[in-house]
Length: 385
Ligand SMILES: *[C@@H]1O[C@H](CO)[C@@H](O)[C@H](O)[C@H]1NC(C)=O
Image 1 (cartoon, rainbow, N blue to C red):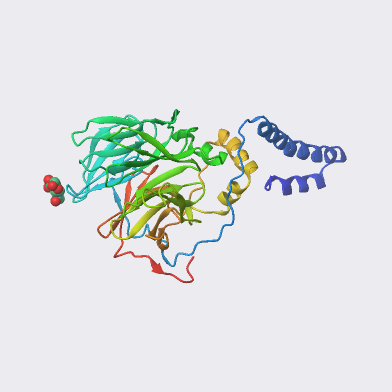
Image 2: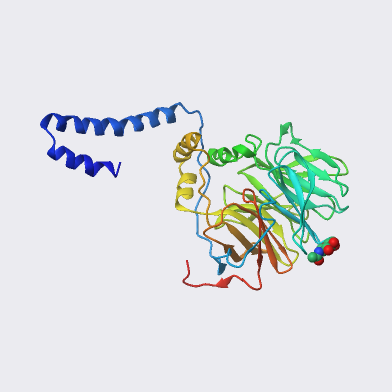
């Protein structure tokens, strides 16, 4: 419209009186028709998003930053790994395990970056954690919670709780006592519909546990807004889970006099959290699939904008608004310590620190990003953007 208007104005000035009358009508019609059509489509669409209980949003200050984390980053398994969402590190063999889009759990040797197909779940492996008998525990978006033995045997541990099937199992960690803590982001929408869950703004997520002795699945916390990554604390007294849509992580007390209670761990993250990993050295690393942005903030605030976006994307395909993705390191108290990100990064879904390197998975991109933290540290940047 912006391009055509000046032209039509100049034309109408030189045209005959008859044509002059038809121009405004044509403009009116060409403007109104799409608007009316959009309104009709919007009204007819049954998608009904809800307001989110967002509350006051104070921007969180992180004093140490590396806002160009792509500089100096190495790409691991480029082209061989499709959407390596999460990473589990096996220190005895110096291997990492990662779950890919095509259902393969692949192994990457860290000494020479050799990639090997290990086991295919025929689902979509997301969150990974090593168990105590050398087994790999997998949160598979389509299958549920899986256990894969060292010789590659796949066993379904659980795929429902309280009569409700999991539709998007995505985060997992294993406590020292063998109990498995995991999340199901939604009992309503599955992985390929994740944006619908986020845009609907209703809490379909659950935080759960699975006991490998009794085989019992327990719902520990329900009504979560896209429950995501899980990390058990080093002292084993609580587990942290992320709520992507609410930009926060919460802690659930496993034992002690607060057992069963849920408390704030960190609110107002500078972006939308996915997996959270403990590094064995005083810090949790929270992957942020995107930083906050004005369009995302507005969408989350106003349900009708989310509805318009969902209606629109039926015609345009999934909207990609993610930018400035990265990883936030926080201490044991949930205080932010360092933020690594890059304007050109999107959909970073995990950050695992191994030695002095940070390995970042992504649910969409075809590689793992690896950064030497000694060589490219986060710094007190003061005036920098
Ligand atoms: C990496 O480790 C594997 C297994 O230990 C070994 O076979 C291979 O030769 C090593 N590669 C390099 C480049 O060190």
